[in-house]
Image (tube, rainbow, N blue to C red; front, side, top):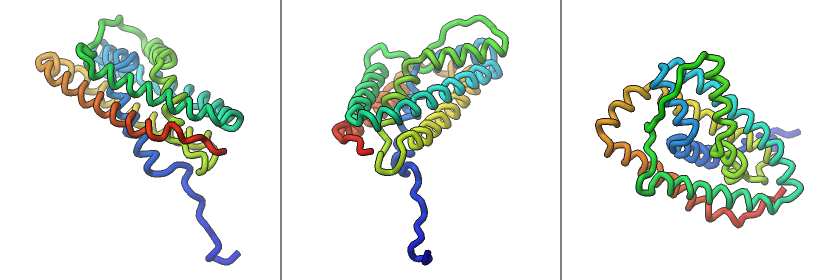
Amino acid sequence: MPLAQLTLPSAPVSTAAVLAMALTALAMVLTPGPNMVYLVSRSIGQGRTAGLVSLAGTGLGFVVYLLMANLGLAVVFVAVPWLFIAFKAAGVLYLAHLAWQALRPGGRALFEVRDVPRDSPSRLFRMGLLTNLLNPKAAIMYLTLIPQFIDPQRGHPAVQGLVLGSVQIAVSLTVNALIVLAAGTVAAFLAARPSLATVQRRITGTLLGAVALLLAREVPVRARV
């Protein structure tokens, strides 16, 4: 084959999709939820090592959801393409819900934690895994938000889902690890400055709301596989 006719294979996902997924994952990981409350509580109450062990369990939970959701979604997109629109709409509504939870009066700040008993490393890992598997935010992330960024014309939806899910996991674990390492110091700092916690909530809520509005325009676009 002449050199001029050779073409390089395109990436499974676009740069824009990766950046949008990373932004969404960042906004979501900064929104307080079961994972965040558990990890910060462990880090403050039992030390950084306990927080990181718990985070490892949380990471495994993300991988389980990623594999299960993408294997199932690949079949769904092929068999019932119109469900793609429903998934996208659900994802937008969920983002809007998270934005409201962060912006509403009396919303929960990032470092509001509860007391937890001290546990062994194996139990910390299992509890991190279980907390994530039972976390509705994690489930909805893979079932409704990742499809927002999938373009069926670029290739198999499952491959794109795995790439985008890997981006989400990388962002989530990186941010959570930094929060775990700094939890004790930051919690004491914010306890003396409650207005900063309010600023954090407003920034997070605004980011989530902006992403929801941007993605709402794409909801009517049907999957073509």
